[in-house]
Length: 326
Ligand code: XMP
Image (cartoon, rainbow, N blue to C red; front, side, top):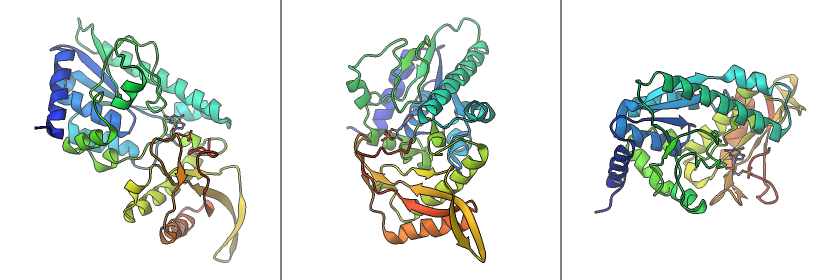
């Protein structure tokens, strides 16, 4: 009979065969469900011959790096290399406000960092290891969309994958290529991955870097991380996670407005709540969150995040708006 259990088993067997008894594989973890489940399956197939790489660019939301570093590793026993590249990314982003320039810089630094980590890992592999495998979380809809092709260096720079280098000489390993997203989540649950990873909403590769309108700095990231964490916590508490496609929280870092708190006048930043419903991110509608949930988000954010004195809700559909603000 068909169960999610034997879907995973089937893939584990197939990958064990593909990689052979001495092949080595590398997998980039993004923090999202696809790369995490793909890695977990390959880990089951080849154990420590898989090394995962997580580039910490400093643009993740609160607790996400720990979810990978600690909880994912605890759940799967995966060998993980974490590259702390926050300073490198923030230095490269200093003074930059244009959205596409931010994306280019983040993409470039990501590839550099990943390639350096990859070179280190291959150097420490036993002599004679010639075959290199790269694990990709390609899903069935992506396979169909790209004409079903797979093979060496056929790395599709998919919007969601985080943009891996185009010219790496790897053979691809794609444990999810027969699966749809909801099946990936079920396999993830079955493999015991943390629910925060399994049920994570889509999150852009450039992370919070494109949710700060204005220059990206450490201080601004910390402000946004706090506001975002509160919004997500209240959404979860209201039991609405699975009704929402995605929930960007955006910091208007170059805007200040006057407010009043206690007996003092404040001059702080607004944040924008951007919860949307969608099927595939191509079109989206603004989510009609219950007023009491919005109220809790607003009250908590303005009370708990000192620099934020105003909370607004984005009620624009896509089109004409995009989901992200940049
Ligand atoms: P927009 O804002 O264009 O976003 O409506 C559509 C979907 O794509 C995500 N997104 C990105 N994902 N790198 C990514 O990996 C990016 O540069 C990027 N920009 C937008 C966005 O979060 C939404 O899911």
